[in-house]
Length: 342
Image (cartoon, rainbow, N blue to C red; front, side, top):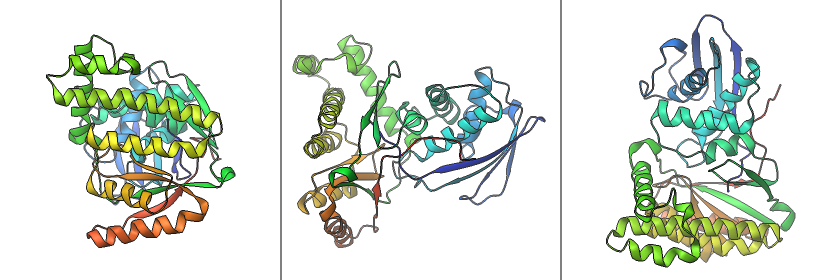
């Protein structure tokens, strides 16, 4: 259940008819990269250009005649912070090309193509949540997404109206989905589903979890992964119910449960993330948990407006005392997803 941040990836795009794709980033040194769209090959590029090139490749593979483009990109989404900077870049370019070439694709269709670009062209086995959030989120709402059929519900999430804030603590510890650990967790989950005879772990009912875990007793690693996924699905349903009933503050303990599960069962946390959560809670936060792909990145912290400064200072002081790089702390506001600016 993601929501879009106010940070933006922006694309300025013009059409070409000569089969050339020219890419430039305001945020990365290296000048202009020039590629031929007919020569784009999966996993041939290990630089940042793989993400936009992958979008063009995915559109062409799906039968859309993209004949080239000049693309200038700029982003305020922190890279490597677990905040889906790559998905934002992919989706904004896909939306721009959709408009430029009059493809008529809807948000969820663009999200699926961007996921394919990252899975096949980049070589990162990511899911579709981040791309769908970038493409489909609405201001003041979180997106309750079923990743099997891509059905969506917009869940009211206007924290300011309730005297609350959601802080993002960027630990400055970089992570990368394509460096193996994400893939290992995914493979373990697929193994668990196969051992339990289901298509996916979402098909294991929460009230049948104990019985399922008994069947996995001989494989402790898979057991932990299964326990995390099944309980996490149930936590999402609890949060949706609480938000829809106006009990926003009650989601705090659910966030804490989720972090403990990510730390102990899924094992993708790190000392900086754990310190953030523990310190924020001691300083008066209502709840906190890591977010993103893990092994670094960011944590989110739910606080009363009156406690923002105290919690922020406590986290910053804890990082300094531990000898960690100073974190970046900012407010997250549920914002609109990808759109044309002009």
